[in-house]
Image (cartoon, rainbow, N blue to C red; front, side, top):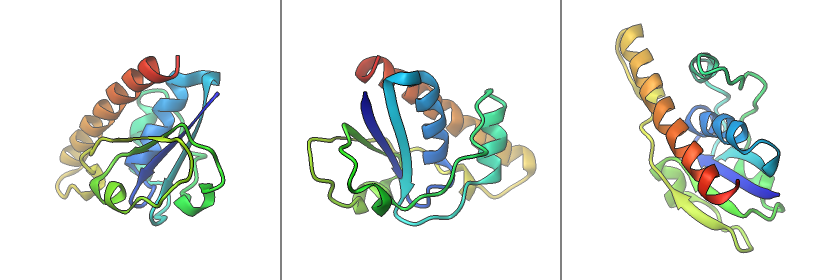
Length: 138
């Protein structure tokens, strides 16, 4: 079984969505964790827009990356540039992968504009997650 860590700045939105999709696609073949350089709580809109895909992340928690330093990760995926640049050292053989996804929680505008941003980022994370699991886990 593979251990996979997804990192973002606040572990509130992009890393939470990635955790949800990675768990969905990996099934029992991987243990998925997500954390942040900081913890901001799980974004309610991330929960809402993941539910549209049939993935429930409402029980996820926002965790600090330091909670995971003892876990031997196979992969560490950073989903924002800030986390990529500030990711702490993890001992071991973990392969590091970086993909900067647009942060929909930073979009200012109408509810519809915000919804479009969340759905766009969600789709990008979904495609990335499905491909990553197919190529590295299953």
